[in-house]
Length: 315
Image 1: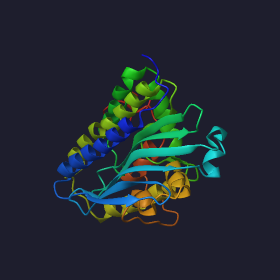
Image 2 (image 1 turned 45 degrees about the vertical axis):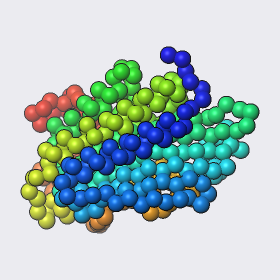
Image 3 (image 1 turned 30 degrees about the vertical axis):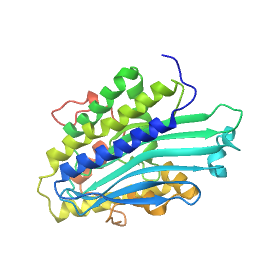
């Protein structure tokens, strides 16, 4: 395959817009009650997007599926400090980003994102790359769900090379890690960035595979768990663990920081926050409880596909 050096920006945008449509439609069908409300916005410095949010659904307490396409004449110093080749270039950044916060604590929170960035300057080759991934944050995890999630991730990576899934799984484990807590945000998935060395066509193909794979990974888990009864204990623990989600997004998440630093729309950037969360001083789960099992057995990097299905039996 001949590597394309000039990115087809319009084709990427068309895919992302359709991806947003497809994900919203499927999640509405899965929820059975809620509908996404669309909010179109314009960025004063250039570009805009369409934010779609579903609240108070039957399954989804709050979820957002955003498309954005922003551009400008120069990047902020924080973005060019590690990439000096971007200084003096105009830029475009586009992507679809979503976060789903279900009401039932037995249904995991999930996040996915696929994005494209290009920086251009007259007389020089464009600098571009793809990024994205998806990750799962359960509160009361089931091993079969985690293995399903990672099976989808592995299978979509398979056509691109044997090393792709292990590499991007590890990147996800490393990225979604709360250093101040010493734990992963959830059970991981895939994370990739700066993807361009395989050429535009092949890199775009991988980004599409990740974007399209999200529903295959997530919807079956939602369908299996959305009817499980729960009470105040599970709800309180869910809200406590949501606090960790907030901590990560505000302290570590590069997408949140990039959006705020480039003058992005604050409401759309922070739609990833849960509608309710709580913090409790020095909380310690009682031993031999499902709450303790989450942190002891799940919130650390694991080779999930090598585990035995008759419970957690780590090699």
